Amino acid sequence: MNFLALLLGLALERVLPHLFQLREFRWLDPLFDAHLRRLRTAAAGSRWVALALTGLMTALLVAPVAILSAVLQGELLQIPYFVFAVVLLLFSLGPRDLDDEVEDYGDALQSGDTLTQRSVAEVLLERLPPDMPADRNRAVERAIYVQANNRIFGVVFWFLLLGPTGAWAFRVLDLFRHRAEVQASDAAPTPTMDAVRTLHGLMAWIPSRLLAVGYVLAGNFEEAMSSWRNRGREATLSFAAATTEVVARVGSAASGRGGLDSADAVEALDRIRGARSLVMRTLWMIWCPVIAVLTLYDWLT
Image 1 (tube, rainbow, N blue to C red):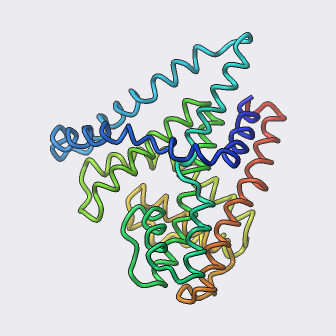
Image 2: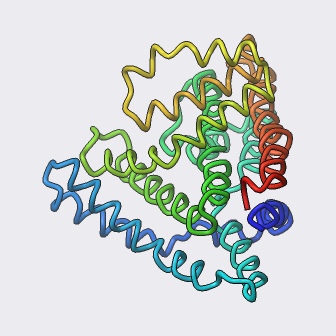
Image 3: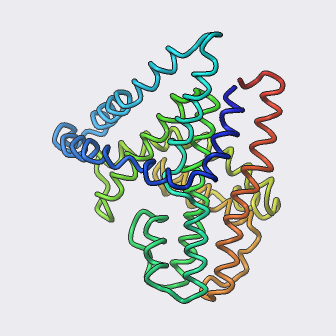
């Protein structure tokens, strides 16, 4: 049933774009901000206290969905559960539409609209973008592969594993991480920021590796595998940052467009649209068929 809910949720996302603003859950921002302020005081430099309090906060936000999901279990409640699962999935994806943002950035590249380029890049990167066009274009390309995990594949993985509760838990942590990133900007890492990134990284780790496998299978196999084996930079990064690095590096290699010049608007556009194409191929040609087979053999519900 979760597989059918997944297909319907992904289809509805394409035909109900007016829901995107509702998925940003702005009403949670004051709650996140208050928790982050208290966490800075309560944690007092302790990473473990920050982890525990952040985990508790996440559990409290996920609990209502978990309770309702449990209540709707049973033979006589399959239709209400199905509707609930589709709605939860629909609101857990995103919050913004990655395809539209890539198109907006591509249009801005073609027209030379630097302001729009910077605006869209800031949303994708979740920080101020680089000033140099080549650096900005490369950063946006990498961000597409990373945001695909945050907005789509991570949600799909946890939805299939734990149902609506898993999808919502991943979305809550991603919203929390995004809010903390916005506040932290380029400031030095703190126990508070580290706690949020670590918890999100734990939930993102498995889907990120499966997504990287999807990139390998849907793209340039040899270049992607060669890039994945090159793990030198990951050793210098934090747990969460290393997860992001794997997805971005393997995706960029799998696109097969590494030889194109990011400083040239036309070639940069090819790389960025190639990234979007690879993400969509991975979703519809790799993940969905595999999920369908697993469901057929009752390995997934």
